[in-house]
Image (tube, rainbow, N blue to C red; front, side, top):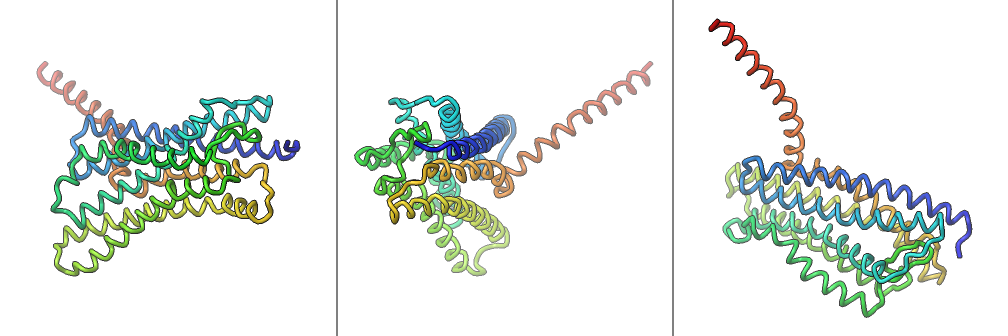
Length: 319
């Protein structure tokens, strides 16, 4: 059992995390709908269309993971206030589902970097620049990643119900389980991003002055976007340092801090909120869509007034 002060601190953490996750979910949902609207009603170049579709995948992944996190936060708050228990098979299933969604949110960044790799290094390969490929790519990854993740975690009894937190998650005292999940969810995508960035950087330097000015400009822009994505993912890994510190303290001392799980999820919630906004400034095509949306809303009423004025003048002139 945990004392009243610890329970109060846990309630505060869960409440703030709920606010972060709700903000991330709402903003990501709005931007995702704007992307769908833009793709459906506006003419978009093929290259930009793929980039925008990949951005849509990122925001959809944030919406799904934030929704699961909101459910976990609500259960924590209700458990703290009313001592409710949510131990059930659905709780275990939702715990695994949250891990899959979190892994997919990182893989969507890898997909963005992979597309830049194809555009720069393997620009002659048209099949890997197909829009249909990048539309179904997340589905393929879910089919591949989910069984791998479950095959690793289920034998290790990875996801369990936490009576102190009132939701199901990977137990941080289960060292093999938490390390396996970290490798699949965090370390794997980060290594892929790092490899892609290094490979593109070396390729651009080897090309020297062979490429035209237009191609160089496009390559520099793509490299800048990958660098920004790499920085974002690196910051996400850094935000996990507090939780990993507590895990190492448990390994050394054998004592588990009661709020370890909530402390570890808190920076993840903050990062999801930050990501929903930071991506707008990291990817030019996405930023232009949102900015142009505001311009369109401003210009349209003015155009309608001008047309109405011209029509009135025509009528008066004919009379």
